[in-house]
Image 1 (cartoon, rainbow, N blue to C red):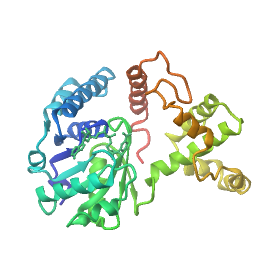
Image 2: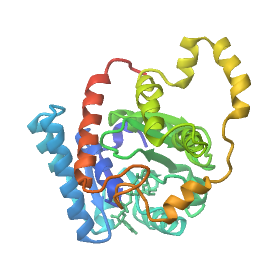
Image 3: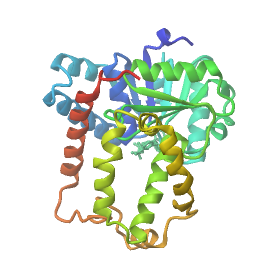
Length: 318
Ligand code: NAD
């Protein structure tokens, strides 16, 4: 399969991720079939796509012609046969569960041509184990998007144990063609790249709160106005280059041994979760969201992401 041969994409699972990812493909000019097991999630997906497009229009990220054209390129279906018909690329985004994913891939293989490329948006299940259920595992790959996928530029491409170089390259190039910023993982590791990096920080953040060194508010302020502020321009390694590797090496020499190397979530965190404080969905997490509208919180965040993307795009290519 060549990149230029791909003109129709099937999204298998049209939930939180599937709807947003489908929209990205449609905005990039691909015909998209959103497949789900029943009409209800498909209707919700259509609604989510409409509201994302409205936000894009209001923020001048798109013209109305582009939004309408994208919407017309998307069909919704509860027939996998219809979704896979004349499809050159299918991306699975069904709930996280190995048995379900393996079953879905088996079904997809029964319905596609030998060179159709199949990818999974799994957050962390083994790509190799999913591939083991396939007769042509070389054309199966990980393609991990970040929520909300229509706004976050990163896409991780993960080679499973049986993924061919050509498949991984094609999926990487496809992500780029859709306007995303892909990265390649040459082999799968738990958490892939993004969650390993993110959770290294979460572990230290929890440690600082547990030790009483900082409040949750100040941990978040530190990240938002310090590292987070810089990181959309320069990643942590370029930050080190600009600061001087000798300096960073010296700091690493005394600091690494003091950083948290906890092997389990700290007890206070487990207690919060067990107590039902799950974040905005229950009204309380590390912070208090009582009397606040969940959709409004997410909408405000998404508008910020759109503004941020408008500001930074094109400023630095890599
Ligand atoms: P979701 O629950 O919002 O959506 C999953 C959809 O799949 C639902 O609409 C469900 O009806 C549908 N579905 C269930 N069984 C199906 C089947 N057999 N065939 C087709 N569709 C089926 O889940 P989500 O948050 O979109 O996550 C999907 C995948 O993406 C998971 O593997 C998840 O780990 C991964 N992921 C999620 C996020 C996130 O933040 N939500 C981020 C990155 C990756």
